[in-house]
Length: 606
Image (cartoon, rainbow, N blue to C red):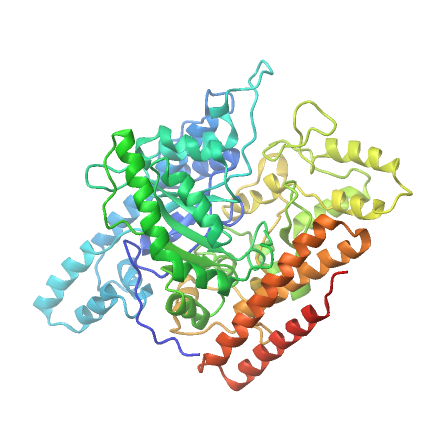
């Protein structure tokens, strides 16, 4: 396919891609690396110990004063988050001011990099090219204008809605609701100086969403502009509609729906009843305008009822997509066919040290890994499938602990403590405390069916709090607390096809089709890869169903089968209409679709 569209970004972002949140630490300092080039990114604000460590590191690097916020401080979690976000805001503002003052004639000047990274069709890039050819007087005038056009990328934050543990005071009593992990994180963001958005992921949390009403920054000012916004990561159109209406009725406008592939992504994986990205995006494209009108009407009525300023009547939400995109053609396809406003590029940026924080050892493990080393695991204490790497040091540590007869982690941070099977206060299923208790309980069922499976799932649990935080600290030349340096990495399956360490320029040029990173030749087209992953998931569920024959499972599988068959038909029609694939690409895609169609024809329910 040829990337020849001249679609340019909308609203304030000068790029048609963003860097999504990755893990707890991989993008924790990404804004300090890429915001000065106008690139939006997302910081996880779930782990305040890591956030405080990163604030200490960057205060030292920048010469900013560092006053520790101890864990014993009242409302420490929220205060740590606010302090770190304010530091990011200040440092990025300083970077932009320095960049604007640089000479365009200085070799390697970042002000030149800012414009050179832009898509070739962006008006700012075109003006920059004109400036380079202009006469002396005109060049000076154009340079002055270009300096004013430099804007930083947004520093968005992520809150995983399921991670909303209640907390306890020094007296052992449960603290009030606003001190839960989720609400405290939201408060930390709300009180920061940032003008950006919170990305809510992993589904709806009514208490968390309701808490938005406590902060004026989420409501319009007299110009109809909201200082802070809400981005919802969703899996399908219905999810966007339900959550969008819930918030609109509270007067909170969703500025963006961020559609993520359920399985062809990094981190936690959420299979979505066999629904595939292509048909989901088609539904968004068809119903976008009606949904915008519906949400805007609801939101304006709610704001009027609260006596607040109305939104600008031309308010339009953005739609972005992410998960498994790996070529400029795929990037442009999403922009052109489905009219998305931007595309998220996550896992490939794990191999770009100028953009993310990954320690050298882990990067080498990723590059050396085979496709089979990227797998869906039971590592997450949330009980949700988790993308993992077999060759990570985190996996090595987990296996070594089992070998020594000491499975599980010490669990110092307790961020994912939700289980009360054996205790009054919730504990984490990855903790040594839980695993010892659970293994003892399982021993009593040793001769029952499913024992080995349940034991294997239990022992697969890993400490994500430490493992997903460590790389950011290691990449900054520091040693994590208690020397817990094992790294858990959660790349999407797409990363198996990237085999190198890249500069920021190389990756951005690859995204925009100016040059091409050499991917492994066996990489399937993005939609076909997602179909293959969804089929694998279906086959695993089908195998379990045949063993246990649960009627509830039958209903879910029938629904998934129907959605997958409809998705395959959609792709067969759609791919047959596209002329830009090479002959070999077309044959490969057709074969994959026919194979999938035959498989589902063979699946029958009694």
